[in-house]
Image (cartoon, rainbow, N blue to C red):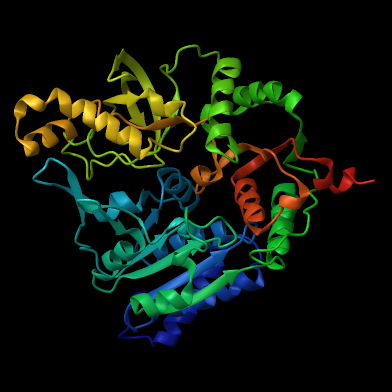
Length: 493
């Protein structure tokens, strides 16, 4: 895959690639980075079938540096690589660090087809690439569900489909990158895309595994990363179902403790300094995220209406309706986790006992996509639920279908209901504050972490993983909100 195999042996090619990769690291490589360079070079030249590499990298161990070095090395030897991530924000972060465009997994591997009932199902596109390295970042988020509809109520496995897609291309390889100290996919106890034994057995892969576990010396100057490192050390000695040792944080460069009475002034300053897209509040529940979003909009951004031009929104349920007429786009998917910016409010109205707006929006992490008009279901915007409940969804369906009862045929009524703009109203939340799962894969210059109600007795492995994931969303400024004295070493008597 790397060089002309007619003149050099695989061992010689691997040695050359190892040196090239190490040369792309701008400082003295750690022991685990050097080990990664050795394993990666062997992986690239291997002639075994279905080659894959799992790279686990904890916060501060130089994972981003390693990924950038891989991309530059591939470019230097004129070999193709494709960058993918689970969400739009994660793809944007990956593209920034790697210096190459990146796409979401969904947009790259799926294409829609219309069902006879007017619904949408998805199939895998053919992988027409050859001898290409697919680099998938934030693989801890990839679950054994999470794929798109394949017809009826059946949903695909994103992990299965990703692997099937990659290896349908001649000579293609897969590199999965992630941090298994972060939260696993919703509803899972571990991240299946980072479980080497299961990947080998379940997908018949020739798999190599490397862990970056040495903290890069330069990173320890950041209090964010040094505290994240301490959290990971606690996780390593904590039983899955038992209590965890109490973490003790140290304030320092980048990490500041803040109390509730100072929050409003802090948020005003941070919005002025960074702008609305470069700041987020991460909290424990959907209910608290709604409360934070309402307070930020009214007291920091001075927004009075339920929704205004300029608002930033996060999509909380996949939608295939509003981009269906844009045939120039590869897919009509507006994905769960996508960020939207409202450009213009066109109309406000109520129907079926539900408030809606018609608005022109654009995808914040897809700058090449056109602006487009949508209906937005405002009842979801301020609900404590993560998205519309099954009962509310069914009630809306029944109300809309009653308007089309004159069509008589059940099939025609269903198709008309499914195409109705109110039934297809986008489900969104404000994107100024969100749960940790919704923030995963993204990074922001400034992050405020709200622990909510927490006692020492409730500290366990799940909470440590939640906190580690939240802390590592910050690039440079982290503010820990309302954390008790017991969590700060300097506050102990």
